[in-house]
Image (cartoon, rainbow, N blue to C red; front, side, top):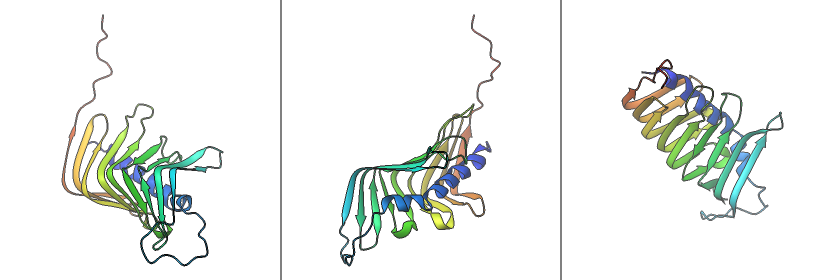
Length: 199
């Protein structure tokens, strides 16, 4: 099977882990008033059409986060995101990496980040490489542990390779990507660049 997945998917997840470790939590947290938190799980504020940008040393965006609606809950300091879109422009790999989902949430202090429902991780195409895409219905990221996982089906594909599996675990500490079960894939040889020209 094509070894580009073992090369690029860990890098894609590495970018996500690096970007979400501190920045995402700081982006969604607003200063809290000096009031005792509610015992019920009721929101204390929300933001419509939320946008956040982290500017790098070069003066250009490093990461962006957009959400149609952001809701914060003071009882457990969690944050819910509607239609989150996280884009990494860092130079770990030479193309932007985007995560989209219908729903997302961030636990207190950003210890856990969850993307739910139609989760799509995309590394944009560059040079002669096609886009690399991973799809699942749930992705759990633990930034401090540099770890990502899902127990649900995943599909990973580019222009000529498709891999299906049930469950995925990735640790940036060990650099091991583990597809848990029922792994199978197809590879289609790309057309030769030396095909005859049309008359």
